[in-house]
Length: 299
Image 1 (cartoon, rainbow, N blue to C red):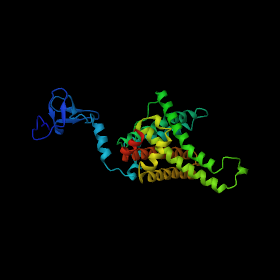
Image 2: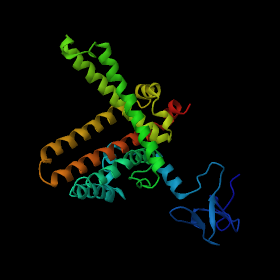
Image 3: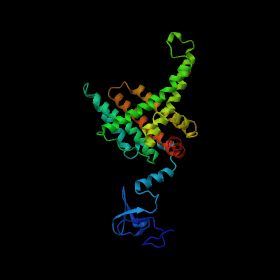
Image 4: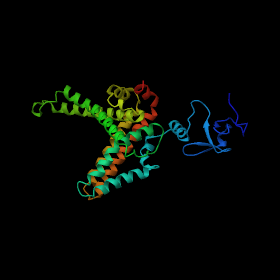
């Protein structure tokens, strides 16, 4: 039974005040970043319904999940919201670090590298849950969490390397160079294995980030199932787009990389944009096909 609003009987109640217990319609509540408040007593109001989201942020994410979001729009994620500051800060931090004398110049790189896997996982997770902007950086002080994220990322990379090694083995290319009879076949085997490994890496990274489970990292069987039937035509399109991003980044670095200082800034800007956007695109893939991918990874 739908309950009417206490102040507007002609409207259905969507919230209930925790303090005055009034039934409230949307006009009877005020929305903050994290909570809803009753306009009558200024205390917290909660949505009605056992399965209703309890924060404005969660409800906004639900609206985003239902809203069309194109891959073209995803390419601009680093230029929206806090992302407009995240990438410049990342580039400035690493470029300024390059000006320090050795070995101090290694400190900014090590610090950025320590939190990078966690940040990429967080981009995937936030995007899969409906965010269209970059999230906050992980906490630098949580050393254990950052180390675990590195182990998860390494597990994804290790599993992704298996197809190339297997294909080379099947093509009898895992011997000394002078024993290889057909180099073209070996090149083809290596290329096919690397391409498959790249696809597996994207699904592995996406699964760990979207579902917050490091145990999914080595699940080669699940990554292959997701690749074959989890995303239909979207998977190859996103994989191709990410490859183009890194190809363009490599081209920029090659053209401008020799310019003093500017080359360092271009290196970090191009690779940072490619990494952050690639993680966002993986999250978009898991957002679009969440139901199917959940049935594969969480069964």
